[in-house]
Image 1 (cartoon, rainbow, N blue to C red):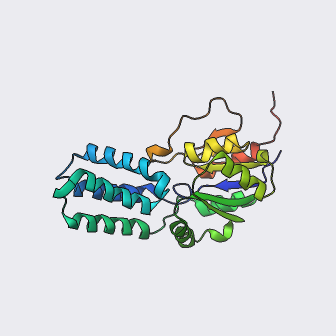
Image 2: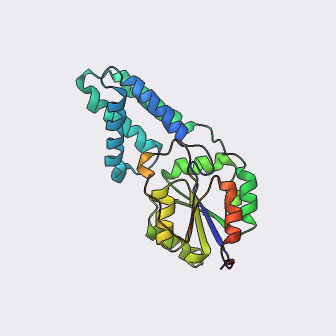
Image 3: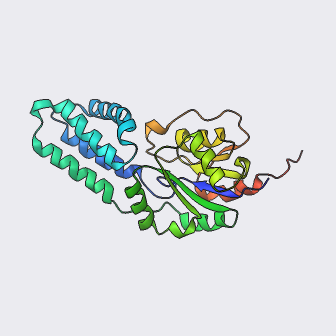
Length: 236
């Protein structure tokens, strides 16, 4: 069956994202140097982030709050008040960074639009994701924009129903095995994993084994050609 709906992740699939989080984390580590070694600061921050996801959700604002909480945990009464102000400034920079498209994204979207309706499926802070989409200039290329608190099997099942397509006529592409690939496959769709450097450890998961509807790609530019093979009879 041909693909009718093409769902795409945003951060680190269409534009750079984690490099900016990395810069904020580097600033955090430098500020906490008097109180903790770099590996301890990072490990404590990651644990704090994971603990806070159910409260703050995904995105720059939750990350900033987790940096502040971790700084207070590691620095205690010795932590200068100025560090909190500096962490807030790092968080503001994270929210205001320029949107840099990945290589050949516009041409790739043009090619994908010839093969099906495009829907952006991204998670995180609503205001920030809307601002990044507006700054990207890509919004008009999508038939739908879905900004969700998390990506689960139920998220994709509801999405396919909303757009009136059977799951086996939909494909999801993104850089997160945990959020983009596994739940889309569980919902019955096809899924293309496009790994990116600097991936957040929280989004890592083992890939599906011997799954007919899964493919790992070297870049999003390979997605149109893979979509063209879906539904073709196997020869030999």
